[in-house]
Length: 508
Image 1: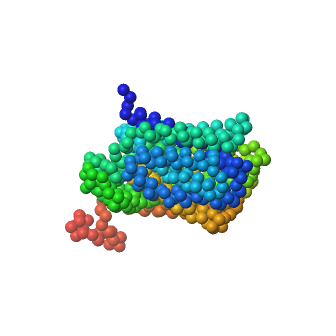
Image 2: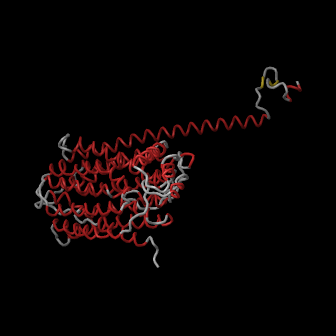
Image 3: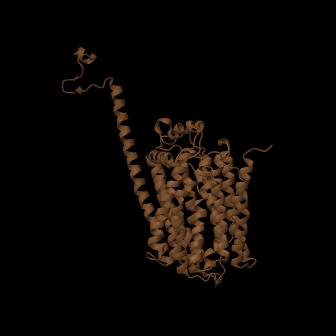
């Protein structure tokens, strides 16, 4: 008899693979600007693509609550339906307005990803978290890499028109859409649906399994060896009176929206009171904002450097290589012995400089091979750092608090991205050409590097001062112990001016 976790895991893996296998994805900009859709660069970059950012931001928080309240399965089905609608419109629809609606439905699909990545934790036992998380996360990575590679091979080797890549992507989405209908309905969720026994367990929250934590990060699926933080979030019953208390008071009934919001606010204050967690969260939000912008508009830059109507392009190979390199880089974190608690800010500074230089080269050199190579370095570096950040943030958090912090960081990243898009990209704002945009993105990452350089230097100075103070106190203690007494000594009279009952005083 098979284990109970196998059935839902297999269904999720089938859904994850086919919904992630998108041969048309690396060639989306070329397809929209090609003869099939005949859209201009300004329409694609400045009018169509920004809609995804706005819809994702608007839907993130309500979908977060709805996912938990509906217990995941309906939201997974909604995600599958949104993907089918998105790629059906990509095949058949024409015009700017239709493509803007397409981006809205893709925003729905993106916002509902949280259901896919959290459903499994409500239907399997905690001891299986590591195993099923690895399967579900890895299969989406494999699906993405396979889709990019298949798309490139069909274009370069078989000469398949880009329209047929969209048809294949639609077919893959339809196949994936069938799987979630057969998933069992979850009997519990993180916030709205818990029983009294589970609520009591929230009083003492144990750290998550390290591998499960890392694999929960977006596009990062790899083990990282556990390292203590220098400023941990208080996770015990003494330091937590939020969600666990609310759930215990609720007993076996469903928790109301007001209670959940109060619990979330209490957890929010507790989590972000940690300086370490706050620092890594700031980097997460800032860098994810820039990452989304670069990834979203990289194809438009490549199209400008090397038009697909005139030359053969290799976007699919680049996406495949960058995804796999990011996987290798993230996996390698587990073998690097670095005290991230002590040197994390300076490491973030150095790698942010690498990212800034990569984006700058993409903008300045205007050579397609330099653009491709810089993009690979950019994605690999980001995926390496987001793995480290995920672990540093979540290693000592419960599943509930990790979901909260992940949601808050993502929301802030999207809020910043919306502002950046509105000001730089959208025709309502500056509506800049693609090259000035990437110059701004490179400068953005340079500012992030400066922020963490200042934070890192400050932390090193404080630590050195603390060590010097500790050494001085240790020497004073040692001298006092060697003298046999810590009472002050008067060298002029050769006697101790201390307690009259001391032996020295009595001898004199």
